[in-house]
Image 1 (cartoon, rainbow, N blue to C red):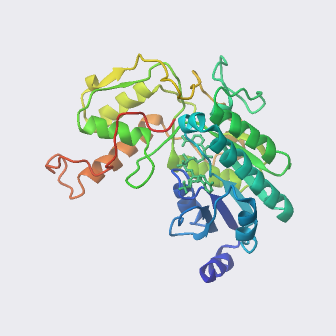
Image 2 (image 1 turned 180 degrees about the vertical axis):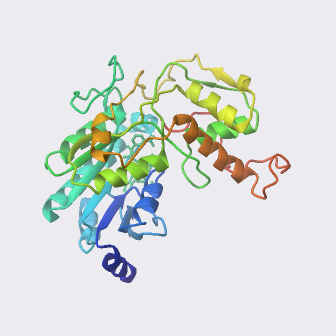
Length: 336
Ligand SMILES: NC(=O)c1ccc[n+]([C@@H]2O[C@H](COP(=O)([O-])OP(=O)(O)OC[C@H]3O[C@@H](n4cnc5c(N)ncnc54)[C@H](OP(=O)(O)O)[C@@H]3O)[C@@H](O)[C@H]2O)c1
């Protein structure tokens, strides 16, 4: 904790990030550590630029003990069982992590009078609205994941100073051992010239995880409270997303097929058209944040992916047969 003390003197503010080892949490810690002392709560060591607090959030007593001496000013709660299909297959775990884990944090923050910021999801809605969902719309989740997050939101909002930030489908370049990501999986398939079907019915507003981290840092560190939607205005189906990625990687568009199959048994139902209004967020950001065009965000992932395959700078001539990104299997869409 010596480093923590030094950084606190240097930066003043300190923030606790749960889920710090996750897809979004790692980028969030990276972003916050530029100007704040960061404490990472996770079940395994957190990112290097933070002080790790290793604990399982579902164990209330352990969490209380672990956080007793952590001088955080506010907490960004990113830990979750965030895979809708896993939640559907294991609703008890989803409830334990997403609801009971959140309840434990709410109690600690209440007792210590610290602000709690919950990262939630657009999946608290059913996707049937003809238009943009606003923060005033009632929740109506259609799968276990959305249901548990909706309950977690209610718990967090019991205290008026707390904040809920609803996020859309996130993407970003990931390399092993990080969690799989839709864009990276798609880049891998394109790179290895595999034809693959993508959904062309469900509309999403994809957001680059680095951009999400930037915007969350901005909002969470402000006096904002209540619910905020954080999503770009541009929407796309996964099919359209994959076609842009193919263009960015210089791969033939006929590798992208249109998916026709229905949701496999046991998997979570996905909302159809999922678009959140960002008006309230943009007003709060008052010009300090702009969503980048989706094409630019996808191009960034393509660039990072390409660099990882061809680190020596001899683009197109590396002679590699095995992509460096993962060693896993690629027969399903990752995550959401
Ligand atoms: N990714 C998206 O597209 C998306 C979209 C909308 C909203 N969100 C929300 O954004 C947040 C972050 O999502 P993500 O994609 O970064 O998820 P993720 O990659 O699956 O990471 C989840 C994190 O939660 C931690 N965690 C899970 N159970 C825990 C427990 N019992 N105790 C302590 N830590 C635990 C995991 O730690 P381990 O490493 O130990 O498992 C991991 O660090 C979530 O709240 C999610 O609901 C994500």
